[in-house]
Image (cartoon, rainbow, N blue to C red; front, side, top):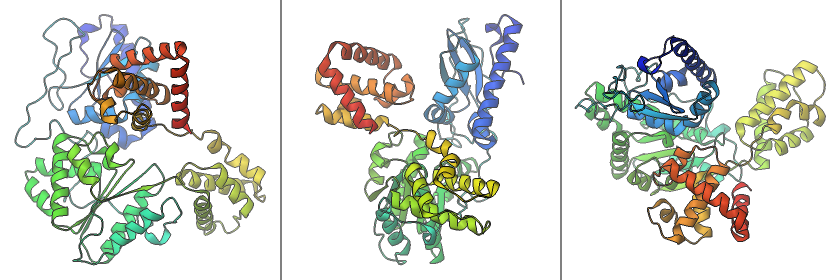
Length: 491
């Protein structure tokens, strides 16, 4: 496989070209292995290496949507792989090519660093500012409103309730059982939780229950909504798509934090307004509350926050025990001799605390250990079986939004002040401390941190980090403040 869209004139030595091509192929193979064929084809199938100049790898994609998605979700991993494979690369820059499927044209100037590209002009059939289905992932066949498939196992009957999810479960049941013709109780119902805490289970349960009552339901993931809308535009049936979407009884959208593109967000907001105004129920799930979905338009966030917002917290120990017992009972249907005593169950529940998926992994390890050894399961054997889960358990993940809120509260300013362009001393200092903590406590790159602080340049973030690093060594009070903020964020 040769490099796509590479300006050959920038590589004088053919040996270097072959070496760079092989390294780029290794990057692509590693991405494919880590993410799987579907994800790789969707987001990286048309990613091309354009040039490498001054320690910067210039990459290109055909649409602004792909550029935004990769920068938001895969920038750090992509940069890390390139740094590993190319010795002289320290940073990546992603740009948009002139048109889908066309290579980047040779720049008008001879300076290889100036790879300016011209974005295509939207037409009547493509008003999504460069949005298109990524290569290797077709738009939904047939009816774009067929919805994503529901998992028949994810029902209210097998949803385990504890202190952390009781409110969300109660709200979900009320919404699902609301009689046809009655005004929605909470509209929209917005459920947010971290990975593996059960929010998707609740959404599927609502959809199952409402469908059983004979009501019209569509369950969509954010990307399915985007692809459906684009498919309708390409087929010139966008008006029909909108009207049919607004003619249902219940719309369920999962992972709304992935909703990208200005035009798509506008249409999503119009859909929300139309459904809510006509008394139709909407249920939304995301990994954070509406106020923290900074990639979404302010009007969308405001609409989402206007209903009932419920958080599903971390699994408490009693709930973890319930989950483990349920998984063991399920496994026993296939392995009748699989027995785990309450002491071992309690031990696993104390040690594996992150999410339900890790608890599934723990039970699978116990089952494998029991099946392979044939011995009774003890605390010691359980410790050996789940050691990797316990050892690799990560500390609390710190979010940039949490840093901004805590620093703002600590220094008696607003989060909006920190994100603003104000340059008064009372705002600049907290802003720089927040940027410093974002660099120290998260894995975000400097450009990403800059974007999350009101669209600032990465050099501004670097200046702030260096400034605070120097200040904490000279100012004991500031050092204590910074250390206190670190502990509060990590505990």
